[in-house]
Amino acid sequence: MPDLKFAKFAVFTNAAVPFLLILWDAFHHRLGTNPQEFVLRTTGTLTLVFLLLTLAVTPLRKLLGLPWMVQFRRMLGLYAFFYGCLHLLSYTWFDKWFNLRAIAEDTLKRPFIFLGMLAFVLMVPLAVTSTNKMVKRLGGQRWNRLHKLAYLAPIAGVLHYYLLVKADTRLPLGFGVVLVVLLAYRALNKFFPAFTQRKPKRATA
Amino acid sequence: MLIKDSDDIKSNEITDEKNYWNRRNFIRAGILAGTTTATGLLYRKLNPPNLTVKKLSPEELQAKEGYFTPEGEAANDFADITNYNNFYEFTTSKDGVARRAKNFVTRPWTVEVGGLVHKPRTFDLDDILKLAPLEDRVYRFRCVEAWSMVIPWMGFPLAELLKQVEPMGDAQYVKFFTLYDPDRMPNQKTDVLDWPYIEGLRLDEAQHPLTLLAAGLYGKMLLPQNGAPLRLVVPWKYGFKSIKSIVKILLVRDQPTSTWTAAAPNEYGFYSNVNPKVSHPRWTQATERRIGEFGLRDTVMFNGYGDQVASMYAGMDLKANF
Image (cartoon, rainbow over all chains, first blue to last red; front, side, top):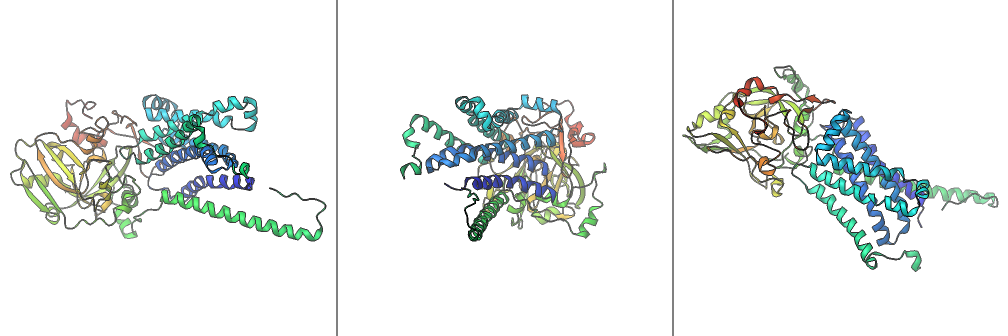
């Protein structure tokens, strides 16, 4: 059993590094030629990265037999929401100048914007019900059912990215492949649990 | 887990505990420093923020004072123009083209001009540059991705070159080809687009006095990322029409299919005139971000060159012919 309190702090700090570097670069005017586009694109990518990291926790802890890894899941999910908020703010500010009407039109007219908004909206109830208190209030089973949305948000997010790029689809496809692997693990786990379950190390000791 | 202080620890043992905690904190600080550095380096590797081409020297900056559009818009910084490029032959990342194209060799270079012409000819680059005096032209440049710059090109009207080869009467269109050489343009080894890059203009568009064959910008020869050694500049059309690193120009009867039109016919039309009223399926073209500005500008029909070019499209439905 590692020092969990410290491990969580280390994960928290590392996840904040990209955000701090964006701030640092913005302060030093080092975000490149089109800083607004850079921030929009980078926060979007970070949202997807953290959504996939969140989904990777359960397979990793089971495959490696490290049950305490579940302790990182909520924090990684909240970071996905945090970077998602920054991404939405960048779009609302830099691309739309808080013109809510233009945003609504964009959302209804353009599938990739709609999917991005959907991914964000799906993350909101997950973030709101992420506290221990809310788990208790909802009851484990209902909470679990609600948090199945964590599978839908990255699906919408990856599609959002795929539909956005002009010609070079390699990066969104890369995210798509990782997502499919992570979701396939769930399917395998459900229908063929013997393949995926390994007993925690301590239990065999 | 945490070790709690308790009363039964003897005073001489406290030092030991301090040492224990010191060592533990030292290891923790090491882990934190190590992992955050690794994360930071990974971020830096994926998002290189530094400019490949540096700013202009003081003398060059002085020359810059003269670079304004007739409407009084100042030219963008040299560093902006040379570090933010769409040139898929090198990479699809706009910030990365300058780095990937740095060693692109553009001499020797020839341009074949043929098709429906009376005097087909393969020009050596130096001969082309002698066809007409190179002049400075400060144009607005509007990318289809809704960003724009002001660029002080150096070149001469394409019409001068076309005159040399004497187009035949049935030549209706001009078809342009970028170099195809995957060893020198490494991203041509991927299939993100159909290579070579092809663009086309109607003959009257190609002969329009605004249409430029550019060999330089800011009074210097073009850098590879800007389409060295010779490129087209059509300021009232979206940037992708202004084909780079041209090796072949054909006069043809039928409308050529542009590379981007072939890639996505519903998104990129043959004409691709700047038009705030016809949005790209995935984003609006009504506004644009001028590089160097924080807010958005309203996009102007024909990128502000309507008084000179609109007559070429009189009676045409520009929504259908986007």
